[in-house]
Amino acid sequence: IILFLKNKGYRVFNENKIITLSFIKKNNIQYIICNGYPYKINSRIVKILKNKIINLHPAMLPQGKGVGALLFCIIKKQKLGISIHFIDEEFDTGKIIYEKIVHPCIDETFRKYYLRLLDELNNSFIKIFDSICNKSIKAKLQKNNNESSFYTRSKSEIVIEFFDSFYDIPIKELQNFSSGFAMNESFFEEIS
Image (cartoon, rainbow, N blue to C red; front, side, top):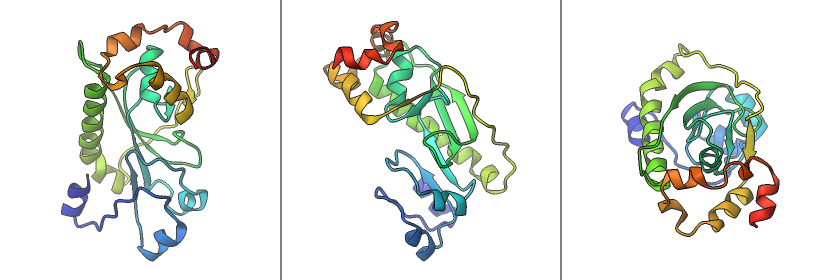
């Protein structure tokens, strides 16, 4: 994505620290593309750059909100895929620009599947970028439904610690992992 944007003539900053309003103003930032960015963006920045802050999210929304959402969507046997959405003032609640169901392959490990989703996100973003810039793409509100959950880093770490060599576990084994038990919050207390 960085190379793609530079080839289009954009000046690109690659940041993995908290983005401040002074940084935005000083560098005349026009867009923010989040791809694994771990911090919540300040609400003043969100207002200034309305519909110009985009998140590439390796899970389907609204089911898979938060850190480690893909893992929980697999365990809960929810829809799997990618979402590209505008960032609003909450985590993973903004209007969806693009989404695509991406099924895991037979015997694919979590690592291989996750890396494939990241490639799919990058390629999809590149395909729709011009439509985002010229505002010809229609974003849609996320549906509020009972399947919507928000996953925190601490919940993800509990599940990750439960498995040995977590990233190399086949997806089908994760799907078979106590899926009925994982549907309620007591799941986290039980396995910790």
